Amino acid sequence: MSATPVVVAIDQGTTSTRSVSLDADGKTTVRHAVEHQQFYPNENWVEHDPEELVQNIELCLEASGGADAIAIDNQGESCLAWDAETKEPLSQVVVWQDSRTQKAVDQLKLDGVEPEVLSRSGLPLDSYFSASKLAWLYESLPEAKSLHSRGRLRLGTTDAFFLDRLTGHCKTDISTASRTSLLNIDTGEWDSELCRIFNVPIDALPPVSDSTGDFGSIQVCGKKIPVTASIVDQQAALYGHGCRANGDAKITFGTGAFALMVTGSKIVRAPEKGLLPTVAWRHAGEPATFALDGGVYTAGAAVNWARGLGLFETFDQINAFDGEPAIEKGLVFVPALAGLACPHWNRDVRGTWFGMALETKKQDLVRAVLEGVAFRTAEVIDAMNTLIPVSGDLSIDGGLSSNPYFMQFLCNVLERPIVVSSEAELTASGAARMAADCIGKPVPSPESGQRYITKTPRADTRERFAEACRLAASWSGRV
Image 1 (cartoon, rainbow, N blue to C red):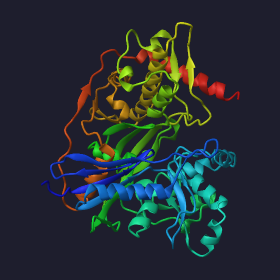
Image 2: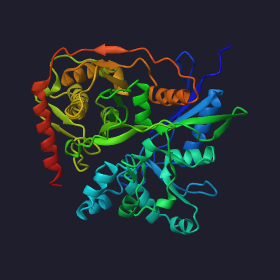
Image 3: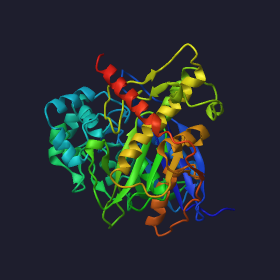
Image 4: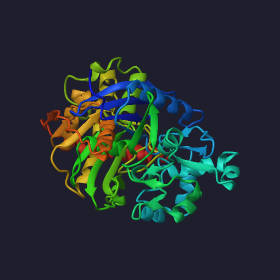
């Protein structure tokens, strides 16, 4: 009979919740996984049912069989309102992809407050972050102001809700808090001026905590198990990749593509490059470790969208292609299906093909989608590399990392070696390793994975893609 796992990690993501056990030898095993429903009640709205998420977490924990500790990673910018006394949600979860507050954000830009927000939080004004969503909840929910007047309103990201509901400890870790636009990145505390700008009552926010420590305990299989790590998903993945030194970087390809680079004790500000300083993590009793963040809104989502259009049926059909790349045939796709994030930060741009002809086939179109995601990712890494050189091989994980064509094309575009991790669950693994470190039971790092080296550099196609982005942005300004 196998020994009890050191840690069970709950990876509560955008489309599913899963429990992953981490054994003393460093092996990870998925114990249970369950998808949850996506709600689109209005244009640009994306919601989850918080009760369904809590139920799925509980199911995943029960299926895990227990451990010495629990780790939880969360979606990041997704948030909700709830009653501090009853722990009942007042709203659906407003998901990070949701852009219902973009008009309010645009008005704040017109009011001239973006420099102040950028200076204090390190983040630009964008509906991607939680602050405007939390303000919308406070202003729109009938019960919000009444509960606030009685000291019972809670506004926060999903991590704080899960902890409050499951352990009775209402807190949010500093890495998650740094994604709200309400945390002062220099002090590591909620900022009263930012809360005033966004109209979010500061006393309704959960306390900011370390990423490791005492988060309470959860009853699992008849035993109380302590939660010793709680962290935002992309920072968990950074830890799972083994990134610890300045310049260590990773890219996770999920719904979007998220690149993070460790900057250590230094807060690197680069708004002119569209890169964001963020808190990577803060261990109990230690100073914070910072990172640079750059995101692409649609990566795996763009490929799934192409599949939904009927451009291909099974993923093995897009692992290889004949002939020269689509962009060398003059066919380009800008994967701005939800706007352009780093380094452009333009929500208005939409996905666009350029260069279609009568001879263009379905496989050409989907190939251009894959190439577009690679070019967008390269824009982010290029921007990072100008500030702090990326050290060593670039570490990759996530769904698209299993596509050989995409990985080799990305490697060629980046003109640097990349390694696809052998660990399939790096987000959960990272959170679990943090929890294991916290309880004094560190585990071995995962083995390195498949390494790609540049075969055919694509530097000559960079400007073509950049021009396509400029054209797509120009077209969006006309509608």
